Image (cartoon, rainbow, N blue to C red):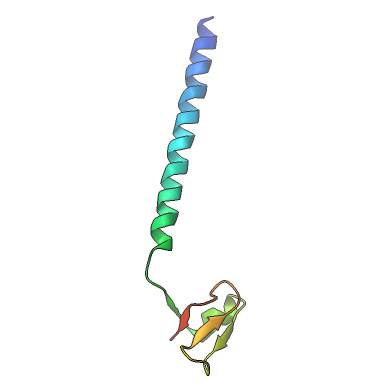
Length: 72
């Protein structure tokens, strides 16, 4: 009986710790998403799978993981 209580306490602690870590990850992701837009090089744009649109207005990366980021 005592082992069951200890086991239940361990499970409850692990579950609460998991919820705490999930909240921290969500808060961190929200903070990063609100940051200023980054500036990438044409090489970084290409490495991310995009196409540097140097001749277009604004010089932005089109497509890939850097889509929409300004090119320096």
